[in-house]
Structure formats: structure tokens, C-alpha cells
Length: 260
Length: 378
Image (tube, rainbow over all chains, first blue to last red; front, side):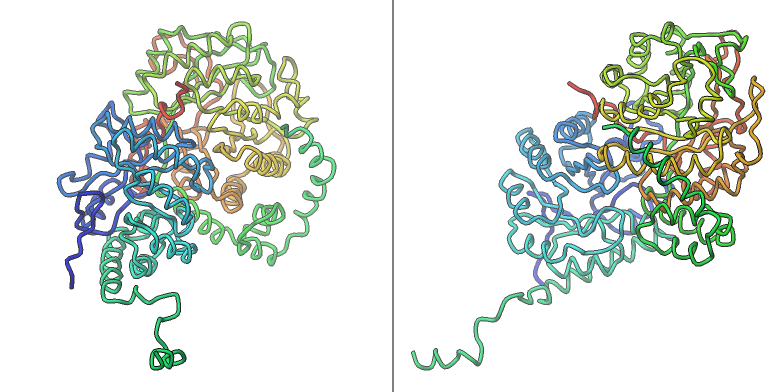
């Protein structure tokens, strides 16, 4: 098998599974799920972090030597709110990675592409490594790449729905055209969904609800760990390279080569 | 935009039909409601009907599952902070009524901050500022000052005060408030007039458009509800369904929460007649039916309910709970002369006891789920 590092800009991550930190029954279960999943990156809602007191600080449950923090801007409804949150996180010492989430509708939490592009432009200029959460929109994905986004994170289906890759064909187009890692975010409800995204050539997947809201989060996080590895191996082994378009050579036109 | 015409149409054309539906609900209606991925008001009627009691376990299971998928196994904690008991209304059910001979108190900013710091030390980051309704003492400037003075203590500040105009809500938002709670008390116009005897609160239509005004001013979290016991519970429930449907479509950026407070003993004499009473079973049905019909709406459970009931019910659909509450002005630090609470609370456990009890059921009690800086207009 080829050497297969997962890079975001220049930094290498040992796992292609990114976990969320919300919705868990307790911080202890969250911490154990993180360890068992072998993830090397977890996302934390900046609005949940209390930068003033140590009380209920979810960050204290994360071993930052092994796991990178990916602060997110969930709750922000426009570019400026997200920018303010990102700056707050950076000032509080949470690093310069940011998962940009701009979701003006608090019920379906669908991302606002226009505001996300605006915020990406601002934050990239300020030196942030920006990972924007987007609808599976292939054009927006390219625009974000041009604006300096470090990855794109298209949704499989709306956050928390566990419905899997409803946007499959658009994600396929995004992966086909991207020069940055494509991380499938949101809607992944089962390890099989994660494996499918990895088989398609996603660089990584991000999972929260499916693990945190399951009856046994720790077991479920191990299941996801294995599914992501399996999906990636399958992609590298060639399954993911199955083309959607017709093959170049075929018996019907072979005679043309012969007559040349 | 205004809910007024929508509600008028509902009252005149739909409400009676809905009430009649309650009498014809069959088992099949309840089962259909449970299986409908996009439940309607008729499914809501089925789920809150007497017939549905036979399927209560299944209803509760579904509601619990939706809640944990959408919100996770977490309960967000908040505390009410009463800052004035002055009131220029007379309401049949409220201790703060103008004609009640009680000790009135309005906190100074210094006293308010003291109460705030006390609550912050307990762990609270989300605060609900509550007062009576008296525009002479509780002025716009004073309210704005109260909010502003607590900004460095709390990450989320909401208000439950007299209904305001859009411009006033804008001032409060500017000062650092992002949430408004306003209960219609009752959606039955006739009963509303009976219970709201004097004062500006008598104007039903001004109150019913308050959530609209709060949203228009840019408030991010808006809580609505009815005080169950003032009129037939079905009327309140169906009206809330209609109000919430309208609000969520109109103000799609705003997060809405529901509450179903039930009338408790207080200084006044009003006791709800039996047909108005919302029983424990019906309250559970309401929580679950609203959750099944509105997957992403907050549902609040206050200390008006007793500890046993709260512990049993919160996993079924609740997203926010108050704990260790005082409904008395200056009631936390206790340094202010004893005065009348607005209503009696039933859950007298300490914050830590409630916290431990939530954890004991496999839920994570969350102090902070908002960042004030996000909403700052700078």
C-alpha cells in the first residue's frame, strides 16, 4: 500500500475520522469515545467554551498532545459573528484552526454559502486555517478553495439527521474537482455511511450525533474508527476509482485503431 | 409582520373545528400521527387526545429519541433573576398584582450585580431577568442598564418583562440581551379579559404581537407559552401550535422555545376550574406532542414543577431547566428585606442537587451554550 498521509495544509493527522464534542451524555463518555476512536482531531463549539473559568470546560477532557482542537463557530448566523467567534478562540489560546459554521436557520442548521465565503476571505487573511462547512455545492467548493480554505466540508445530509449521503452525486463532483482535502461533514448516521464516503475518495469524515446520541457511544466510536479505515483502504485499493464515465477503449471502436 | 390577523383567522375558522376533532379521535388516528413524518395540527390533536393515553409509552419513546438526536443528551441550565416586583397591572393569578399589599422592591444596579455574581459562582452562565410590569419604575433606561451591568458576568442574558416596542427591544439587544420570554398567559380572549383586570396588560392584541416585535428587533432566542389553568388547556395548546408555526416560518433565523407553566398557589384567590386543569398526563402529552411536531424547538421546564416530576419528565423532550430558583426580588443573596415571591416553586433542591440528578440519568447539564460576543454589534 502506498504511503497515505492525511494532510491539512502542512500538518499531518494520523486519523481520517474527526469527532464532535457535543451531545454526549457526559464529558467522561466523550473523552473515552475520543480515545477509542483514535481520532487526531476534535471539533469544539466556541460558544460552549468558557474562557473565563475552568468550570465545565470541555477542553480539559481532551488530551491536546494527541488530539488537535478544531474550534467551530456553530451558532453564528453571519460572517461577522463567525469572525468574532474565531478571533475569540484564537485569543483564548485555542489555535488558528477554525471550522467555519454559519447557520442562519437554528432549526435545520443549513450553512449559508454566501456568508461562509465572506468569512473565509477575512479569516484566511488573518492567518487562520479555515475549514468551511458547506452544502454539497461544487461551485462554492471551488470558490472557497480559491479564497484559501484549507479544506471543504460538504454535508451528507442535514446535521443530526443520520440520513447518510443524500448529496452523494454532488459530493462526488466536489471530490473530483478539489485540490484541497474534502471532509464529509454532517448527516453521517452509521459506520456504513462513513465507509461509503471514504470509498468515494473523501479525505476524512466528521461524525458527532451518530456516536454521541447512540446508546453506547464508546462502542460506536470504535465502529466508526474501523469503518473509516476500511473505506480508505478500499479507496486506495481501487474501488473508489471506478469511473462514472465510459471507458476509453472498447470493442465497438477498436477497429479505428487497427485502420490507423 | 404580525400574528394578529393569523390568530384571528384561526380563532374564527379553525379553533372550533379542532376542538371538535378531539371527540372523534380513534386509535388509528393516534398511530397515524406517530408515523407521519410531517405531523399536522390534526396529528397534534391525536397525540394530545385521551385516546392517545393508550399509546403514551410509544409517544414518549418517540419524543425522547427525537430530542436526543436533535439536541443530544444535554440539559441547558439557567436561573431566573427577579429585579423588580413593581407592577401596574391587576391579574387574578399573580402575586405582583398592583392591588396586592406586598412589600415592593426594585434592585439597585449594585444589588443586581451582587445577585448576579452569586448565581455565577453557582455556575450559571445563562440568566433570565424577570420583573413586574411598571413603566414608571422599570424604565427603558433602567432595564438597559441592568442588562449592561450583567454583561461581564453572564454569556447569555434574556428578559421576561412587560411587552415592549421594537425600538425598546433594539436598545436591550444593543445593551447585550439576546433573548425574550413572553407568555400570552391565555389565548382565550374572553378569559384574558377576565383575568387581566386593570393595566396596560389588558390589551390582548398588543401582547400577542410581542414575539413578533422581539424578533423584528433582532432577538435571537424567543420563548412563548401559556399559563395553563386560566382557560381550557386545549385552546392554549392549539393556539401555541398555531403561534409557533407562524413564528418559525416568519422569523426563520430566531430560535424559539416553549413552556407550559401550570398555575400554582399564590397570594391571590384564583383557583383553576377542573376543565382548565392540565394534569400530569396531559402535560407529558403536550411536551411529547410538541416535540414530535416541532423537532428543533426548545422546551423549558421550570421549578414550578416538583422534583420527582421534573426528574421523570426532562428526558422526554426538555432542553432547558432552571434550578435552585428564587422568584423573589433579591432572593438569592438574602440581604434584602423579605418580600413576596411571584409564585411558589415546587422544586426546592439546590443547584448542585439538580445537577447531580441530571447527571445520574445519563445527561450532561450544561452551564454555557452561548457566547455573548457573537451577538455584539461592534
